[in-house]
Amino acid sequence: MTRKLIITSCFLLCVFSCFSQNRTKKQKEYATIGSSSIQYFAKKKSLNKNVIYVNGGIIPLWEAYNINYERMVVNLKGDFVNSLWVRAGAGGWGLHTEKGGHVLTTFMMLLGSKNSHVELSAGVTLLEEALSGSSNNDLLFQNSNSYSSDENPLYPAGGVSYRYQKPEGHFIFRTGVTFPEHLHFSFGYAF
Image (cartoon, rainbow, N blue to C red; front, side, top):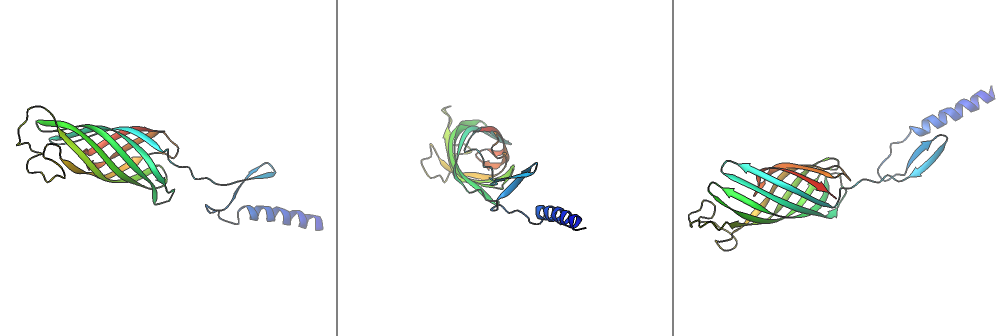
């Protein structure tokens, strides 16, 4: 009788100790292999620090395309604010019959902790007019309240985007509403 009571007590103690506590992020976790336990620390996977992608956007009468490089400057690993990034890019734009190139730089904040993120960005873009002999009555450059000369106006850049990027994954997909791309789609590679 005593032997059955001891065996039953040991069995129940083992079963209840395995399921008695919820693990938090800061606690040590255990993995059981056979009859032995191995201790390890749970490490939250982070996003790759460098991203390069192509971006294209269009709305009626306006189109823009560019290639961008992003670099993570601060990895917060939070559940709400994930990381802070800087972006530099260059490409082209077209408006009705006008066209030109642009260079942009933005500061970005990624929200969300798993595969899907909200991306908020703010910065500046330099829109350069193409050398096509166009006159001063362009739709984009007429009466612009820019921060530099009328020939190469500096405009605010930024917007809100959805970003799919797995932690430690390489594939990037972005879509959203930004300037200068407007409604855009992006595909890229993280490393």
